[in-house]
Length: 403
Image: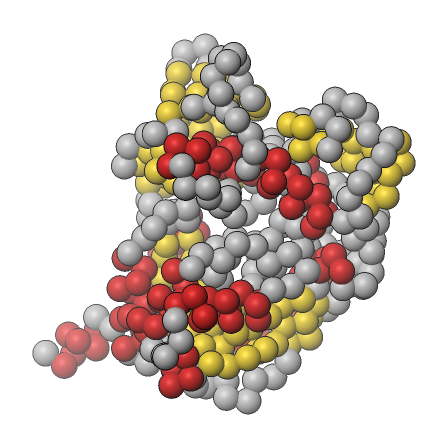
């Protein structure tokens, strides 16, 4: 019986060994690429619920160097969707999977299991890497999770990661980022707090705005692929942008703006009211949160040429159609080729999320689908407008747009 219990534990000694091996192998590359300062944490072998703002795709390697005990990240199931790669990841570090864009109660049970076995749990409460340099929306449920687990909370703040590698970009900039444990909350300290008090403490501690840090992030192409994130012009409303090197241009009105190495925005052609992408991104969210989405004309808000796949978690991604026209209407999304047609109403869709730089996952009719466009495809606009529709239908005055 004892052997059976040991075999079924989530935590395995090899998981820490694999983290040590990966860090030893990748540390010189990561340190050179990100110029990261990892502030030592004295009680790095203690058991914690680690909460950290999410800025780069390598955040997990920074954190695995700060915390030396058994650590387990909550990660998206998409990372495990390939049978071979997913199997390797499960064997080596066994992260806690969650369906991004959904309320997955299974993750709570998995976290409780890891905590009971003595492991630390690492969560990015934003659920997404920042698009704007600001810490994004944090779901209030993180406070309930913390109180349920009853672990000390290590609040880790990262700064400069967006400047070095914006989520929407392809390349790295030469700059500096820093990550440190900013505050530790022991259970005896926060157990008497209301959920709202704990939630506010988490949000306040993890808030960062890289656009106001005053640092330089050097690059010859700082603006390229900004159109993966931005799609609202202050002059035209819903639009598209084209970027080239340090500039980007609205395809409707021709306004052209420079994205500087100091993360500032400066007009070149026409007027531009936003001094940085953080303020522009806030305007974009406000604009979408005021869209009517009335069916006055049944024509698409946006169209793109994409590949549609069904995600069979842990096995493969099944191609449903290539080079399909994706069309977003006020109440549905359609995918069409000469031979195939798929239509999903927003009522059928139960959740939507952007994966990585610009892949779109959505859950409909009990299945998961993934959309991938060209290298300049903007997945964010589809997710934002979908959640705007949901907020209207639910009449909840909500402003959550999926990120």
